[in-house]
Structures are given as C-alpha cells and as structure tokens.
Amino acid sequence: VCNFLLASVEKDASRGAANETTCALFAVPLASESPEIEKRAFDLFDKAATQRRGGMLMLVSMIDHLGAADDAASVPPLVKISKRPIFNDQFAIRRSTVQALTKITEKTAVDALVEILGKAEGEVRVDIVQHLAGISGQKFGVDPAAWEGWWKANRETFKFAATAARAANRAEALESRS
Image 1 (cartoon, rainbow, N blue to C red):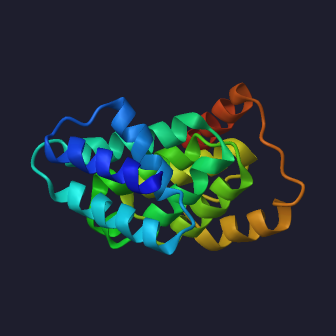
Image 2 (image 1 turned 30 degrees about the vertical axis):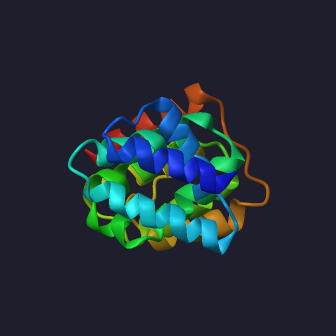
C-alpha cells in the first residue's frame, strides 16, 4: 500500500499537480515504521523540496495537515522531519513543522518541541516558547534548560489547558517580554 501511495505522490509531485489528497497520501508512508518505506518516502520528500513546480508547497501543506489533524499519529512523521538535514536547511520546513507540532495536544508533541528548542533560532524559537508558555503558564523565555527541567518535572501529570487559557498564557508571556 505504501509503495502505491508513494508512486501516486511522486507522479503528482513531478507534474506539479499536488493537491490536498496528495498531501494526505504522502503523510502515510512518512509515518511508516518500515525502514525501506521510510527511506523511499524521505528520498521523495527531499526531492520534492528541490522541485521548481510546487514541491515545497506540497511539503508545507502536508506538514500543515498533520498539525491540523491534532492526533498522536501525526507526531512521529513530524519528529522524523525535524531530524532531517532539510529541517535545518529550509526555513519553511522548520517553521511549518514547529507550528504543526504546536497544534497537536499530545505530550509527544511537547517532547519534540522541548528537544527542538535547544537548536532553534529566531521566529521558530519564539513559536516554541510562546506555545510552551501558553500550555504551561510558565515564563522561562528562551531558556532551553529551564523548559527541559519544567517538562521533565511535569510531563507525567501534565494536562493541556483549555484553548482560552492557553491564549491568555501566551499573551501574558508576550507582555512580560516587552
């Protein structure tokens, strides 16, 4: 099944005709635990990033769809993407991956964000810090060690606050920065 999906994605991507369905199809092999499928999927991912006709748009759209799904199954492919060289090389991939992870209310998404924070810079770092402040109510700023310590101490009992509370926490964290 994954081979068929990859062939379909590759065909659409090479024609510059990737759509929402193509993006959804691509997420399936990226989540595969088969080393062979994972290699093929990420070879295609890297190739799509260099295509002139819509490759990067397809990748960012697929990443956005994973975040919008807000489920545990979306986290592993996003974590895999965050560990690829393209994550460091392409701002669009880095930012969309982090933003997708911030939309997922799963502890594994927070694990990934806390890990990424130590390497993140600029707007991506701010995205992570705003999200962590929003879900925690804490004001550690851009201190990765403080966030790691907080998460280690609170992960097991952590519960995501309601959306309104997260927004208020983010706003408060932004005010304390100015």
